[in-house]
Image 1 (cartoon, rainbow, N blue to C red):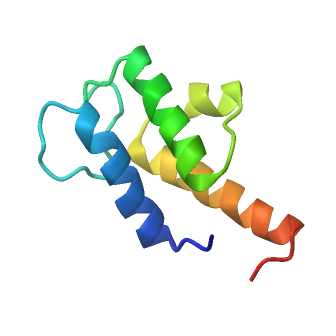
Image 2 (cartoon, rainbow, N blue to C red):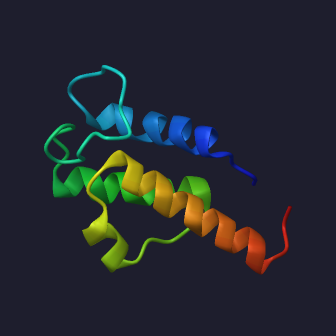
Image 3 (tube, rainbow, N blue to C red):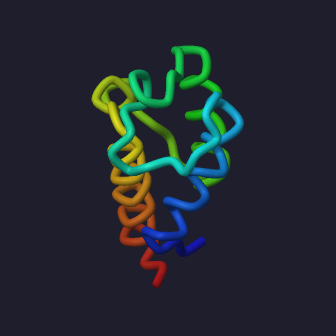
Length: 90
C-alpha cells in the first residue's frame, strides 16, 4: 500500500473525525488534546485504527511524543517509508 503524504492526511482525518466534537476541518497544527479535545481513551481507539489501516505499529515513546495531527502524519509516513524500504516496495 503506497500512500502519499496527502493520502495519509486525508485518511487520518477520516479516522479522527468521529472522535471530535467540532466537525470543522482538522488542521495539521491541531493539538490532539487541546484543540481536538481527545482523551486517552479516544487516542487508544485512534491509534488502533491507524495501526489497522496503515499496517504499522506505534511504540509507546512515539505515542508519548505525538502532540499534534502533524506528529501522527509524520510517524505514519516514516513507518510506511521504512516498511517500503525494508521490503523494497516502490
